[in-house]
Length: 95
Image (cartoon, rainbow, N blue to C red):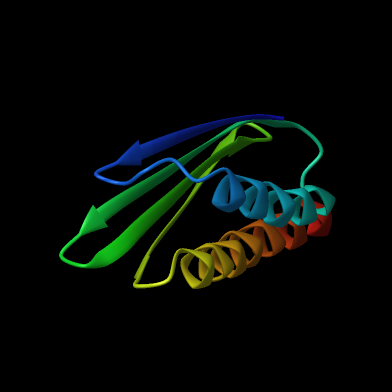
């Protein structure tokens, strides 16, 4: 899986990238073919805004969250993406 990270108005953090990689590894059980993933971190008004754009199984899954803590933000994004993928997986296997 190819993961692109973008940092806007923030210093690059290898620890946050590694944490996001660990979270993204967990969602691979829902989809067979992950093409790419774009992760954007941006500082806005003392909050960190994060976006996940996941391209998998000919679909695009998006999640957006804002929080003061980057790790809490990544955790919430994982939950949002996981819910979307779980719903997609259930619909796909029901047919």
